Structures are given as structure tokens and as C-alpha cells.
Image (tube, rainbow, N blue to C red):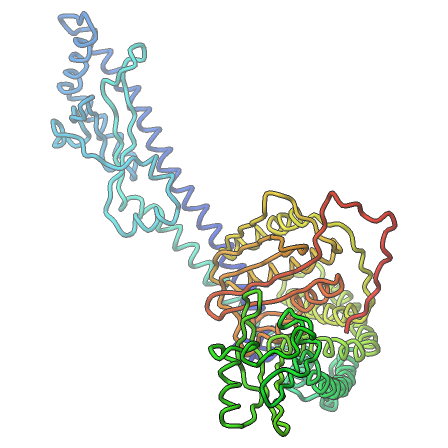
Amino acid sequence: MFRRLSLKARLHLATVTMVLSLVFVLAGLNLHRALELTFQTVEDRAQANANQLRDLLIQRIDDRAVNFRPRPSDLDETKAMWTKILIDDPLIPRMLQQSGANSHLVADILITGADSVVLTASNPAHAGANAPNLPDYLQWQKRPLWDRVVEIFSKNQDYSIRIPLGVPEEGQEIFSIRIITSSPLLKDAVRPELQSVAYLSALAIGLSLAYAFVFSNLMLRPLARIGETIDRMAQGEYSADPLRQTTEPHEFADLQSKLGVLGKQVRGAREDADQLRSKIDQLLQQMEEVVLLFDETEHLIMAGRPAERLFRLTRDELIGMNVRELFPDDTSIGSSIRTAVQFRKPLTDMLVRYRMPRGEEVNFLLSLDWNMDQMLVTLRDAESRKALASHLDLSSRLAAISRLTGGVAHEIKNPLNAIAINLEVLKSRLSGDNSPLQQEVEVISKEIARLDRVVKTFLNFTRPIEVKLTTVDATELLREAGQLVEVQAARNNVAVTVLVPEERLHAWADTDLLKQALMNIVMNAIEAMPQGGPLYLRLLREGTEVFLEVEDRGGGIPEAVQEKVFQLYFTTKEEGSGIGLAVAYQAVQLMGGLLIMRSQPGFGTLFRIGLPGIDVEEEVPDEEPEPISEQTG
């Protein structure tokens, strides 16, 4: 859906989204602060009332105890005296009623004994009853703010703030003061705050939308035309339309013209790539083929060198073997050959499965031809051929991009620099002005910066890269990658798990290139799980090679596009750039490593980087290897 929008519509949407996000964030922060302050005020007032009542009760009890006869002789008699004073004194209920009337957040005040029996209360009807078992307000205050707000608007619940009174020397509680508040009272306290924030937010949103649409139409019109040209080029129309007579700045007109030149060169590069692909396809027909010639008795009389790798036997050992020995009838290849022999018919590129001597199964394309009584069997590795074709296609695309960007990128940067300078002048004139014009200029500045990054990306693919191979601590590098993406992963609800063996593994690689490739793959995996999920970073060793694996549990990559994932600017994400995996592939390729991808739609994707392993006990060569200067393609 987002891809179908024009550049102008995207900029409109981005501007409105940014403004709305800012309004909602500020409104949320203000509302959070106001609600927390309201709840804290309830607690503070209740504590203050309870402390004041405590002092008044102690003073009243002391005054009454002076005239009490007989005088208590022990603690039990003292407790009985205090309890009787609280029950009989008519002044104490009036004190409680007056204290509750002074606070609109207090529903009731209870004085209870150690057995939770109400001795006296602001409501005399509650005296003599058991105190209700209410949630403690101080504990309720520790719950998340949203839960508290939902509760006071959805439930009719009372809460209690309890202040115990007793004999400090004995450490016993004789009676307690309970301040009762309720959710309706709390709701009445927070409702004005909610209404105020909602009103201000609605006003800010309305003004922001009006400013965004009015001023973005005026300021982003030239960029919209450039966006239309880029969209046409992306759809295969490689030439820009002639410039219309407009009042647009000459910098934008120059950029539009350069895009037209770039489109023509892209078309020429694509034609070159198609020709190169045709030649490569012809070469692939002769590569990785297992050729076997059998005589009329079905014994092998000739075999190509690839047959030695397939059967793990020398050609001298293979010559003279029967076709049934090489391909038993109960195998896929054997049954297909037996059927062709029985009906004396040829086979062409039949997909068959063969179990290698080590146990792994490989797909082959089986062809069978007849020459008099002799039988020619040809096997082509379907998987290797497909992968090799994909890699060569990718290399040819990168080479085509390298050829076309050398001259055009420099020409595009000139109008971009002029536009950037004029924008800085405009920004200086608008300095201090908080009107939406300043925001729209910022949007234009960001879009120019984005175009500049695109040009730099082209240049980076044409510039030679210096590779410095050394011993890299793969264990530490993988852990560091996990730490670097923790924040971004947490924002996306992605749980990163780093799995490394107990022993440290080292690889022969370029530290910077390896880190760049790994981070691009990890960030791509995080973006592949918009709803969150687990992300596994593994390190393992197989034989002499070290493998770094990145596995996500996202939606996977459709089979139809899996061959294109390493192509520059190809992406399956709505907001993806299509650069990260291409850069990662280039980096691993320059280090002499291998980057492979396995994906199952609906279950996730696995990327695997394979590099030569290094034992730390091995002596590193005294002479540092000369840096390798490679050019992509």
C-alpha cells in the first residue's frame, strides 16, 4: 500500500505522522504527570489527616485517662481503658466527622481495635461492626498507572490507608486509624485532568494537520516532480520527461535533467547485463556436469572428471562398473534410467534425487541420450547450478551499477550541494520562527540528505575496498553485535539470544567488514519481525571453518524472490532500502567467505556466514599479508 503512494503523498504522510506522534507523546507525558500528581495528593492528604487525628486522639485519651478510676496497673488494663474511652467519648466521633468533611477525597474514617472491630467512626452506624477488608491504597498506588485509571472508571471500589497506634516500648498495636477513600471520589479528582489534556491535544492536532497540508503543498512541489521521475524509472521507464516551464528553482531542474541521463545509462547497463547473462548461461551448460557413457552391456566405458567427485572413486575404478552398481534400481536415478532403457527413450533434465556417499541428498537434472547401442547419461547439480547462476547474476548486476554510476553520481552531487546551500540560507532567514515553514524546510533538508546518501551508496560500490585480513575473535564480535542491537531489539519486542561455545573461536577475516556484514544481517532480521519474536545469534565450528548464524522467526522470504535477496536495492519490506544485504554479501565475498540464506515462509530465515577458522595456538605469519584491493562486480 505504501509503495503505491507518490513521493509527495509519502512526504505528506510522514509530516503528519511526525506531528501527530509529537502531540501524542507530549499529551501522554502531561497526562501521566497530572494523574500521578493527583493520586499522590490523595495519599498525602490522607496521611496528613491520619497524623492529625492520631495526635488529637492521643491528646483526648490522655485528658480522659487522668480522671479514670481505678487506675490501670498493667498493659491489658491500659488497653481496656483506652478502648472504653474511644467507645464512650462522644467528642471523638464529631472529631472524625469534621476531619472527613474537610476533605472531598475521604469517604469514611474508622478507629479499630487490634481485632479489627470498629470502636468509633465518622459514621456512628459503623461502630461495633467488623472493619471491611479493603485494598491498601499505598500498595494500590504501586500498580501501573494505566491499570489504576481503568479500575477507578470501571469499578466501584473502596481503598484504605491505615495508621497503627500502640505502645512503642512493647511493640504492640492497640488500635488503628483507617482513612477510607473510594473510586468514585478518585474519578471525580482525575476527570478534570483528562478533559484538559484531551481538549488541548485535539486543538493541537487540528492546527498541525492544517499547517502540514497547506505549507507542504507549497514547499514540496519540486521534490514531488523528482519523485515522479524516480517512480517511472523504478517501473522501467528509463528516461525523464522533458522539463515543463515552471517557476521551480534551477537546482531542481538540473537534478531532473541528471536523472534523465542516469535513466539512459541504466537502460544501457541493463542491456549489457542481459548479454552477459546469456553468455554465462551458455557456459553453465558445460559446467559441473557428470558425463557417463555406457556400452550395449550397460558397463561404463567413459566418465568425466566430475564423476570422481560424485562417487568418491577414481575414473580407473569407475570404468567397467555396471549402471546398476552405480545407480541401483531402488534409487530415483536408477529407476528413471531403467524406465528409459526399457522403453528405449531419451530423458531431458528430469529432476531426480541422489544420496551422496556421505549421506546428504542432492538434486540433479538427469539427461539420457542414445547413440546406436551406447547410452550417454548426464547429471547436472541442480542446486549448485542454480546458486552459481544466482551469484553470477548478482555479480553482473553489481558490475553494471559500477559502470554507470562513475560519471553520473558526480554530476548529481553538484545540484544537490547547491540545493543544500540554498536551504541553509533559507533556514537562517527563518531562524527563531516557530511557524510550520521551518518544519517544512527541515523535511526538504532531510529528503536532500537522503538523496545524497543514495549517491554516496553508488560511489561506495564503485570505490575499491581495502581488505585487511587478520585473526578475529568471532566469539567477542558476536557478543558485541548482540549488545549493540539490544535497544533496537527491545523497541521491536525482539528477544536476542547469543549462543557461543565454551571455547573461543577465531576466524581469518577483516574485523570492520565482518562487523558491518553481521550488523546489516542482524538489523534486517529485527525488521523482519514487526510483531516481535526470538532472534538467535549462533557461533559454531565445522571442520576448519567458523560459521556465524543469524536466525529469526519472522514471516520468512517467499520462494519466488529468495534468489534476489542479495541484489542491490531489492527488498520485500515496505520501508526497506535494499542495501543492507547487498553490502553484507559484498563484504563477505571480499574476505573470501561464504554467505548463504535459507528461508521457509511462515517459519523464519537463517543467514550463515562461513569463514576460515584460526587456532590461537597456530603461529601467525611474520609478514602481514598485503591488503587486498577489490572492486565490486
